[in-house]
Image (cartoon, rainbow, N blue to C red; front, side, top):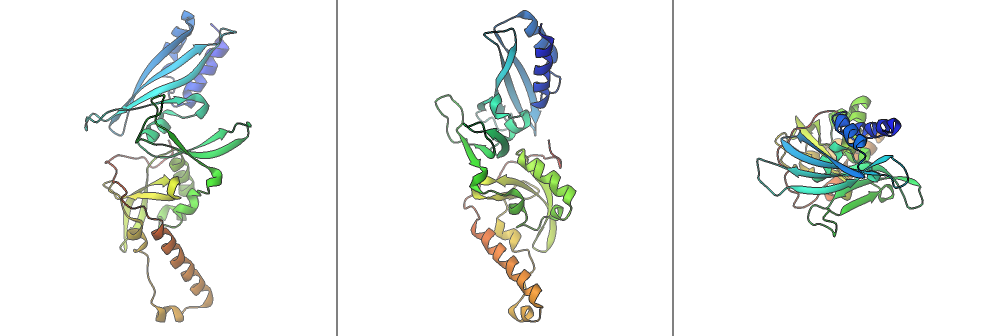
Length: 274
């Protein structure tokens, strides 16, 4: 057995989120000398089960093996709905948790290589409404030139965590992995625990209450303090400018609100990047 090849593959599995759970089975299959083999794996996340088949193939010019792809099947035993299946190729660099998030309909930011081998960043999101000729969900890609700035989108909302740089960094990292993240936000003059997730398509964020019911952007922005014209005249020049800026931002976000946004099913989320 090529020890260096084995160690390379175990590192690849660790980076992809499988840790060392498949190392023993991997070693056994490599020692068998098969031309190709598949390793099954199963995990449970947020009360749902995801079954995976990892595909390995031997090089045509050496005894080295390559981890090419894994097929993921996500099902929710409680609902009995049809499982969602998709094959993730290793050139996409998708981890186990990112695959779960993508199959849940959320977006993930990845560093990719273009046809010219130049690196770029893009948000990936599966179109779960249809399948392509390979029985995969089409992937919508929002290139960095599309202009989605996650931090800027978050700053339009009264999120308490944005006041702490460390907490903000954790939130950004987690959201870029496709997670739903818990935050403290003001609504109707009261602080509430809510959940947010990235929405690159509409250059905004999705907001949910503690029961994971969709919350309209206008409900959050309406919670901000308002000042009458008479009160505004009593303010200094700098304060007036800041207030006008806040009002323009509120109108901009309210106009970006998505009609008919569906409520998500209840799910748990950890307050850290995974």
